[in-house]
Image (cartoon, rainbow, N blue to C red; front, side, top):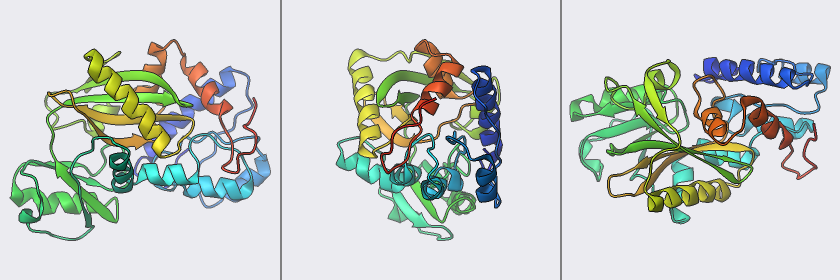
Length: 303
């Protein structure tokens, strides 16, 4: 848990919850803070597997996964390539679009650039976000062209590339998949005082309402399930993942991003979706642990 990401605090919350769940099931689990001494720490403990609760940064973009590949230690979640692709919004969207999924129009910029508004092929308002950060960190809704540079600068604090996309009016619906099995979808109703589904909405109790299962028309529900499984497959992911989408008034399902190491905190959505499917938090954690393996396709870790 932990690490160098702006999401480190959330990662520690996930890590503590996972630690408690593993110990309640009789596993000898040790909390490890990711840092420069990680190699020495893992050598000292010689773990059978690493349960990754490292959201964002090097903990989710394939770097930590590659490190564990070199050490030969099975780990939970997606492999090196899937993690890297999932962390890059622009690249994953390109793959999703190629695979027949609906994604927002996206303009990718180098952080620090100050483009004129006329380069964008869509009208205001815009959503401006870091290319490879999560938890809505660095994300701004821009309603006036005069506010664009400030939003670009904020996003640029968290990534070397910045994305600008149109603000789409739609329902915030997120879906879960575990080892290729669709778990279901949940709708988020952010606090009306928030401009969108912000960091505050995600992690502060009472700042959003959740509806599970999301109430969707049959055709939309089927479209969302297909998009979730297809996105998981296109990036060759494994373990658990969460797809973030907008369901537009016309029934379109627009894919925003996929999270390869989704939150496992008290207010996180994957545990809530799992509970709705009859999986306790401990069941979910144990299922994720059982899929721990290496990219080399060595046998999965067997608890």
